[in-house]
Image (cartoon, rainbow, N blue to C red; front, top):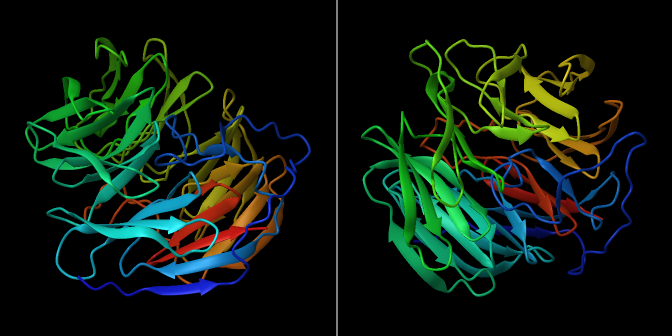
Length: 396
């Protein structure tokens, strides 16, 4: 299969490290140095600290046309990984790109699949790729060598991006009810499964204390990470709708649903509803930096306190903000359907830099199997943006 391949390198091969610069009042609390799954980390809180990413403005380091709609990137180990919809037929393609040069490090690799959905996770020195048919494969991230591959049993539709934590890969499947899976990252053995309603579209959010998934009508579950023992379940009386990936922040499970319900905050300890906030159920996942939360709703970015849920500042941009935000060193990055990327001071909402990426930056449609799930990523001195068929890297 031939892929369109365009590389624009706008700087030297070496990416210079810059000093960490944090806006006054911001207190970065995120993952250090790498984006390892959807919305940066296993908590999906969109927050990252990377001393190699200096304060904006940033400059474009390289741009790649991957020949089809591009997924969220995984950025780790000197590589940028992403999948793209196959330019011909069905399935997706895995790309491994040298973070410094924008050149292929290895591959590309055909992941197959009935539709154009696939997703990635990184951890334990391996890269994990999952396609729509439930084929989960572990690769050596340095060479592309396949370490193991397993077809997850019992379901036919897989649209829940995998999450790695502490030697285990967690994901979900649907088709006949729903199933949550815990897979040994060393050899692909399925360690445990648990039945759930629906089972699609929700990338597990994981800590040492729990595996959290949320489906249609806020049907939210917590399981023990090692044993799979049910810890609690949050149920509602609504019907219909569809779930979204939950976010773990400030002792809460932040869940969204498109059945017309107000997005909820559940207590991580028992699943009780702690509160809610006004937003469209289709809104993307919020990001957090300590108790500062960043929410996109109807094309506008709002900052809210995670406990009071008070809106303290609003950034309208061009009114077409589409991405889930991420926070890097206290700066909030968001993109627009117009192709605009902004960096904002997370404490004040002031725009400190913006640029035209060169193509529309699509919203993260968590119910769409005609393209991989998209989103921003960062790590290794870069902020990485999927913009339709492009993957664009910015840094110093």
